[in-house]
Image (cartoon, rainbow, N blue to C red; front, side, top):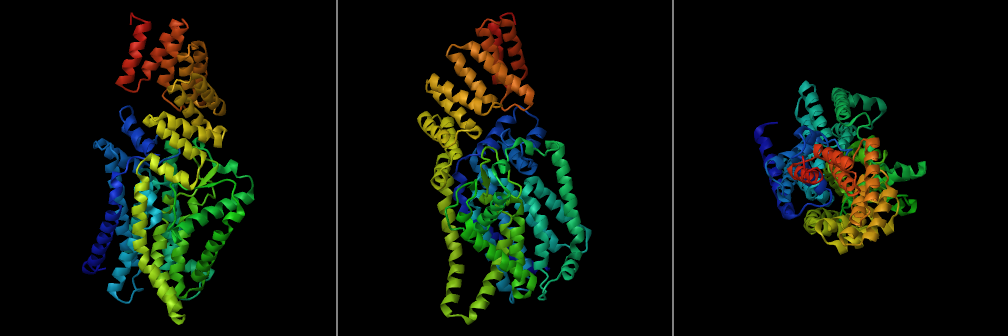
Length: 603
């Protein structure tokens, strides 16, 4: 393609990116919310105590399943540059999203090659695709939420892969290597990039332009020129698995997470989980003008009758796409592009239930999972609109007018939705209150209580955490019993604190944080002997599991103080020396040394 013919679409793509950035610009003033405190703020605290290599390859302690070094590197670079507030992180998210809008506009220009009769129409349509994607309401979560940066970066890498696949010579090695490298980079951003392997052949079929019906032999022949690319993608995928195994172990870190699989009672329920997951995602892409709460989840078990109407509608859309792709004609391009969208969703369809940190009784269908798959749906839009317009040409005029009214109103409605949604992500209280209004689940009350605890609003923290443990009282609610115990202790209610912390320890025996705080309350209540027993058990469990869920130095320190209380000075000194050896920074070191000098003045 000549440079002069390519320049207008580059300018158009930049303008689309600028418009999208302007619409989202108020989001830069939002605070850190929910997982941001773990992914960004905790990472900042860890940098002082660990080598940069470990910070890059090993995620925060609460998210051991994640192996996403590329997004982690972007966080580290900002932290090393002294950017510790939320605004710079929001701005980077906006820049990445704007870049994705530009790349999609360029990609749409290539996909429309030969489809638009006039260059001007082709340019306008390509920019329109970029705007539809950039302002699609379902993408508010990945753009506004800092923790969703892996989805944005994965999409950027995969859009580059699609452009490389289109721009470089079809039979050249550079195309094969370029697509594979971009795909590998996307996998290092987020593991759900694997859906690209299933979606790419469908894009290749969409670009054939052959009107004849497909058969098995023509299908194999049509994809034959791309076999080297597919082979390279598989090799890149196995290279990713090897890298992840080297860092996270043979289980790839999955053993650290709780899977919803044990809460899916039967094969029929598993089928319903997959159907419900795909239905939620397809419907959110097709009609996003609804209140999509953050980190959408589907509670288990699935009620078949509740999902049946929308599931039937989505199944009908998929069936029409399959028919259009197989039969050929004008419907093949949009049909194959829509099927590529569906194929890219396979990794997040809960065929293998997506692991959860603390909510395995629900399956995840978060809006951010659509960040890359939506690329194909947006590419299909102009073809669907033109096909619908052709079909309605012989129908009453008002139907055609209604179609174009929807087309013209879509972007203004998207802008309005995005601007309404941005303030709902303002801070933890706002986003969690919004989410609770949509789905009042125990874990959302628990997170809200955790936020109030961090900010010192103890009465509200107690109310939210008490509601959480009333809604659910099993091992999954143990962290919220722990939070409730800490709140009661800070309010001076030792008896209630002991009850809550003992409950947390019973429900989650491996939770050393619960035992640590239980020992603090026991010791402050004058029962240092019980505190000794509790802390000894906590350290014993850590030795058995090998996976501490809190800094071990603090456990040794508190155990040393408890030993000193009961007159076991030798053991107290040994524990404080062990704590000193595990001090995470100068403040801890000074605290541990001060306690050691009080017990052993000769030191």
